Image (spheres, rainbow, N blue to C red):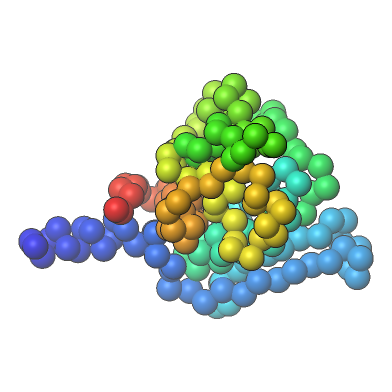
Length: 199
Protein backbone atom coordinates (compact mmCIF):
# COMPACT_ATOMS: atom_id res chain seq x y z
CA UNK A 1 0.00 0.00 0.00
CA UNK A 2 1.20 3.49 -0.82
CA UNK A 3 2.30 5.24 2.45
CA UNK A 4 0.35 8.41 1.59
CA UNK A 5 -2.80 6.33 1.05
CA UNK A 6 -2.28 4.61 4.39
CA UNK A 7 -2.08 7.99 6.17
CA UNK A 8 -5.17 9.23 4.30
CA UNK A 9 -7.14 6.12 5.25
CA UNK A 10 -6.24 6.60 8.93
CA UNK A 11 -7.17 10.28 8.81
CA UNK A 12 -10.42 9.77 6.94
CA UNK A 13 -11.72 6.88 9.03
CA UNK A 14 -10.49 8.19 12.38
CA UNK A 15 -13.89 9.71 13.22
CA UNK A 16 -15.31 6.18 13.15
CA UNK A 17 -13.04 5.07 16.01
CA UNK A 18 -13.19 6.60 19.51
CA UNK A 19 -11.28 9.87 19.87
CA UNK A 20 -8.27 10.49 22.10
CA UNK A 21 -10.02 12.18 25.03
CA UNK A 22 -11.23 10.31 28.11
CA UNK A 23 -14.94 10.92 28.71
CA UNK A 24 -17.18 11.06 31.75
CA UNK A 25 -20.94 10.67 31.84
CA UNK A 26 -22.81 13.03 34.14
CA UNK A 27 -26.42 12.29 34.96
CA UNK A 28 -28.36 15.23 36.39
CA UNK A 29 -31.61 14.19 38.05
CA UNK A 30 -34.20 16.95 38.21
CA UNK A 31 -35.71 15.39 41.35
CA UNK A 32 -32.56 16.06 43.38
CA UNK A 33 -31.50 19.25 41.62
CA UNK A 34 -34.36 21.50 40.42
CA UNK A 35 -32.17 23.05 37.70
CA UNK A 36 -32.58 21.86 34.96
CA UNK A 37 -36.31 21.08 35.15
CA UNK A 38 -35.86 17.74 33.31
CA UNK A 39 -33.31 14.93 33.63
CA UNK A 40 -30.18 15.50 31.54
CA UNK A 41 -27.37 13.16 30.53
CA UNK A 42 -24.07 14.86 29.69
CA UNK A 43 -21.04 13.25 28.06
CA UNK A 44 -17.99 15.48 28.40
CA UNK A 45 -14.22 15.20 28.04
CA UNK A 46 -12.53 14.65 31.43
CA UNK A 47 -9.71 17.08 30.56
CA UNK A 48 -10.51 20.64 31.54
CA UNK A 49 -10.87 23.02 28.65
CA UNK A 50 -13.31 24.88 26.46
CA UNK A 51 -15.39 22.60 24.24
CA UNK A 52 -18.31 23.18 21.87
CA UNK A 53 -21.69 21.96 23.11
CA UNK A 54 -24.17 19.96 21.03
CA UNK A 55 -27.51 18.40 21.88
CA UNK A 56 -28.85 14.95 21.03
CA UNK A 57 -32.62 14.61 21.07
CA UNK A 58 -33.72 11.04 21.74
CA UNK A 59 -36.33 9.19 19.72
CA UNK A 60 -40.02 8.79 20.53
CA UNK A 61 -40.64 6.81 23.76
CA UNK A 62 -36.90 6.26 24.28
CA UNK A 63 -34.55 7.11 27.12
CA UNK A 64 -31.51 9.36 26.71
CA UNK A 65 -29.25 6.75 28.34
CA UNK A 66 -29.93 4.32 25.45
CA UNK A 67 -27.47 6.50 23.49
CA UNK A 68 -24.53 6.45 25.95
CA UNK A 69 -22.08 4.78 23.56
CA UNK A 70 -22.81 7.28 20.78
CA UNK A 71 -22.60 10.23 23.20
CA UNK A 72 -19.26 9.02 24.63
CA UNK A 73 -17.84 8.47 21.13
CA UNK A 74 -18.67 12.04 20.08
CA UNK A 75 -17.43 13.54 23.37
CA UNK A 76 -14.09 11.75 22.95
CA UNK A 77 -13.42 14.16 20.05
CA UNK A 78 -13.76 17.26 22.22
CA UNK A 79 -17.48 17.97 22.28
CA UNK A 80 -19.82 18.25 25.25
CA UNK A 81 -22.93 16.27 24.39
CA UNK A 82 -26.14 17.13 26.22
CA UNK A 83 -29.05 14.68 26.03
CA UNK A 84 -32.17 15.92 27.83
CA UNK A 85 -34.85 13.38 28.72
CA UNK A 86 -38.14 14.53 27.25
CA UNK A 87 -41.47 12.94 28.05
CA UNK A 88 -42.95 14.05 24.76
CA UNK A 89 -41.38 14.17 21.34
CA UNK A 90 -40.20 17.47 19.95
CA UNK A 91 -41.22 18.20 16.39
CA UNK A 92 -40.22 20.88 13.96
CA UNK A 93 -37.47 23.41 13.79
CA UNK A 94 -38.57 26.98 13.31
CA UNK A 95 -35.05 28.40 13.20
CA UNK A 96 -32.53 27.82 10.43
CA UNK A 97 -29.54 26.05 11.90
CA UNK A 98 -27.35 23.29 10.52
CA UNK A 99 -29.23 20.00 10.73
CA UNK A 100 -27.91 16.47 10.35
CA UNK A 101 -30.42 13.72 9.53
CA UNK A 102 -29.28 10.09 9.63
CA UNK A 103 -31.88 7.57 8.51
CA UNK A 104 -31.94 3.81 8.10
CA UNK A 105 -32.75 1.65 5.12
CA UNK A 106 -34.84 -0.84 7.08
CA UNK A 107 -36.98 1.69 8.95
CA UNK A 108 -39.77 1.44 6.36
CA UNK A 109 -40.04 -2.34 6.77
CA UNK A 110 -42.24 -4.15 9.29
CA UNK A 111 -40.48 -6.39 11.78
CA UNK A 112 -43.49 -8.69 11.90
CA UNK A 113 -47.24 -8.67 11.28
CA UNK A 114 -47.97 -7.25 14.75
CA UNK A 115 -46.13 -3.95 14.47
CA UNK A 116 -46.17 -1.27 11.77
CA UNK A 117 -42.85 0.04 10.42
CA UNK A 118 -41.02 2.29 12.89
CA UNK A 119 -40.27 4.87 10.21
CA UNK A 120 -43.01 4.48 7.57
CA UNK A 121 -42.61 5.91 4.10
CA UNK A 122 -43.76 9.54 3.85
CA UNK A 123 -43.26 10.20 7.60
CA UNK A 124 -39.63 9.14 8.04
CA UNK A 125 -36.11 10.54 7.86
CA UNK A 126 -36.45 11.51 4.19
CA UNK A 127 -39.54 13.61 4.89
CA UNK A 128 -37.92 15.13 7.99
CA UNK A 129 -34.90 16.09 5.88
CA UNK A 130 -37.12 17.62 3.18
CA UNK A 131 -38.87 19.73 5.85
CA UNK A 132 -35.60 21.07 7.32
CA UNK A 133 -34.38 24.51 6.37
CA UNK A 134 -30.88 24.69 4.84
CA UNK A 135 -28.18 24.05 5.69
CA UNK A 136 -29.08 20.41 6.19
CA UNK A 137 -27.28 17.14 5.54
CA UNK A 138 -28.69 13.68 4.97
CA UNK A 139 -27.20 10.19 5.32
CA UNK A 140 -28.83 6.76 5.18
CA UNK A 141 -27.39 3.61 6.76
CA UNK A 142 -29.16 1.33 4.32
CA UNK A 143 -28.58 -2.08 5.93
CA UNK A 144 -29.64 -1.08 9.45
CA UNK A 145 -32.91 -0.67 11.30
CA UNK A 146 -34.44 2.29 13.06
CA UNK A 147 -33.17 1.38 16.57
CA UNK A 148 -29.86 -0.31 15.68
CA UNK A 149 -27.84 2.64 17.01
CA UNK A 150 -29.07 2.16 20.58
CA UNK A 151 -26.82 0.63 23.22
CA UNK A 152 -26.92 -3.17 23.40
CA UNK A 153 -28.52 -3.05 26.85
CA UNK A 154 -31.57 -1.07 25.67
CA UNK A 155 -34.71 -2.96 26.76
CA UNK A 156 -35.77 -5.66 24.32
CA UNK A 157 -39.43 -4.62 24.62
CA UNK A 158 -38.38 -1.35 22.92
CA UNK A 159 -36.06 -2.77 20.27
CA UNK A 160 -38.33 -5.71 19.34
CA UNK A 161 -40.80 -3.37 17.65
CA UNK A 162 -38.53 -2.28 14.80
CA UNK A 163 -36.90 -4.33 12.07
CA UNK A 164 -33.20 -4.60 12.76
CA UNK A 165 -30.21 -5.20 10.53
CA UNK A 166 -28.17 -8.37 10.60
CA UNK A 167 -24.85 -6.53 10.74
CA UNK A 168 -22.77 -5.51 13.76
CA UNK A 169 -24.60 -2.90 15.87
CA UNK A 170 -21.29 -1.48 17.07
CA UNK A 171 -20.43 -0.63 13.45
CA UNK A 172 -23.77 1.19 13.17
CA UNK A 173 -23.09 3.17 16.35
CA UNK A 174 -19.55 4.06 15.21
CA UNK A 175 -20.85 5.07 11.78
CA UNK A 176 -23.57 7.31 13.25
CA UNK A 177 -21.18 8.78 15.84
CA UNK A 178 -18.45 9.27 13.22
CA UNK A 179 -20.79 11.10 10.86
CA UNK A 180 -21.93 13.24 13.80
CA UNK A 181 -18.31 14.03 14.76
CA UNK A 182 -17.47 15.05 11.19
CA UNK A 183 -20.65 17.17 11.02
CA UNK A 184 -19.90 18.91 14.34
CA UNK A 185 -16.28 19.55 13.35
CA UNK A 186 -17.42 21.11 10.08
CA UNK A 187 -20.28 23.16 11.56
CA UNK A 188 -18.85 24.21 14.93
CA UNK A 189 -15.12 24.30 14.19
CA UNK A 190 -15.17 25.18 10.50
CA UNK A 191 -12.96 22.20 9.62
CA UNK A 192 -13.06 20.75 6.13
CA UNK A 193 -14.11 17.15 6.63
CA UNK A 194 -14.32 14.34 4.12
CA UNK A 195 -16.53 11.43 5.12
CA UNK A 196 -15.70 8.05 3.62
CA UNK A 197 -17.42 5.17 5.36
CA UNK A 198 -15.06 2.21 5.90
CA UNK A 199 -16.14 -1.27 4.82
